[in-house]
Image: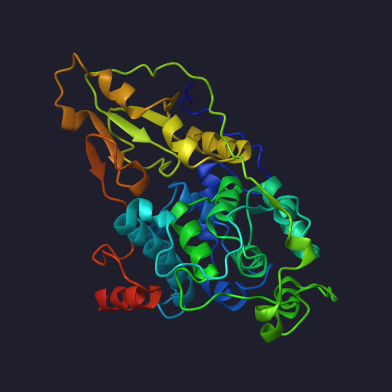
Length: 382
């Protein structure tokens, strides 16, 4: 499967364009002051750039650079830059913790009743009307507002008393901006496994930030009462979650073994990456990766459409070793034939790994809290 030069980019996703030119227009339209003032509300002036950042179409640094070039001061843009830094922080956690990103990071999640999926969440039947509506939207458009994600995680882990891991996989499966680091760490933050305390919501808070007025629910109570209450009847049902990804059937890509091959993946779909170089370009969809981290058909189609922004890219459903083996008779050195971008999910790739475009490249390693990380980031700019 190959996207030809100049091929029209057609998206089936009405909410999130997959046309790179339109994505850049969205990037240029950011207003960080409005964002800071309204971001917590469901209809706030947020960027809707998360799917493109997560999929590597644009970088967090690219977003910050655009903001500052538009004339906003660091202070005016600080809230948005800080939110971008959260993404960077979670990536640094993943780099250090590797597969332990799937374990409780700071302490064991307390008061866990089961490790299953809440049926009410899966079926959008929590009886919290805006939450159910937003879960249905997630299934359709692959996106949830950040406040809704926190509410959903709180309902799953702290009201329904599920361990965070299974419902986090469910949410990741459906998100266009699915990012294992951000998703896992955020769920753990809500569940109290990566924070000093659990995050709770009540109906008053939900109503405020979603502009709703529902009353009489199991969340229509004080925080003190909600912390102490038993699992509501509506959240008692559980389901064994079964997720899988049906990858497209493809042939081996046609590789000119006199040239290196750039490897793209679901976290690197950057059309500008080494754009002028004479190389093979392959989007690789490894069955091993999607078996471990499955995504929905909707998400997979979004990824496939985004890759059409990259001229002459070929799509291959198979393991990276098959690409390397195509060079068996080549004169190129093994370390030069395959080029990718560094990423914790793809450390097994052979060859050259280009660095990602970090906002704070000098701030590396594990920090136990975001704000200890953020302090180092701010200090690094002085």
